[in-house]
Length: 273
Picture 1 (cartoon, rainbow, N blue to C red):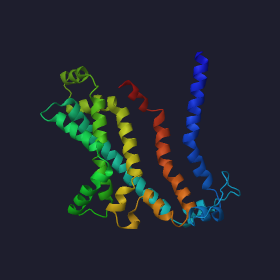
Picture 2: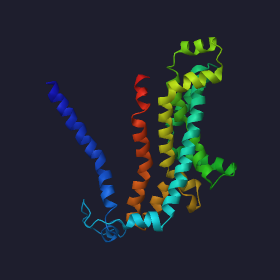
Picture 3: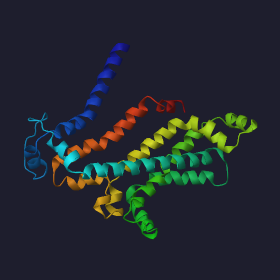
């Protein structure tokens, strides 16, 4: 009976995985289709039957995107660098805020944590207008700082680190203080190693949020040369359908790479929190 249930679960999750991976498979196959089959369907809006497996297969769009047109690679590295900087700054701020809210008791700490929760519940459509006004007042409108600075101070990382560090036994910290360790040593030698799974998760989520942003640059950026890769796909998709699929594959590479890198590292420790 157990084997039957296990086989049923394996079949169910196998079909579920196929359903999730199928759009990615279609995207990869479409990136190898010739332009004379893609343009009528995706650009001109004509009713055209597209094959799942491209025949013939062409890589001319990859050669054009990577060798002839430098816009894609320049935008990729610009978005990648800014997203990594945003994620690293978010990790540092989340660690500091989470430690203070979890282990340093002061009047109003619970209220501040409640404000963090309310800020997390607000959709981007509610906060984009205050972001626009603040960037105008700080004279950073139409700069990368207008796009990525609000993401650095996103409340999710601080809330996650607060919940993670709250499970750290007080005895460990008290023992370290009795041995003469200051706050810096406690933070570096006890808190950070214990909270490393949460720090990896904050980095991954922060990078993904900065990497996939699309509403903010539409409002906070006016110079097309400063558009992130996510918005470049939207603007170029009206001209070339092949460009969209090639750029989409390029866009998922960092996220998949980080997931594969972190899969067998510290994220499993979150199950013990």
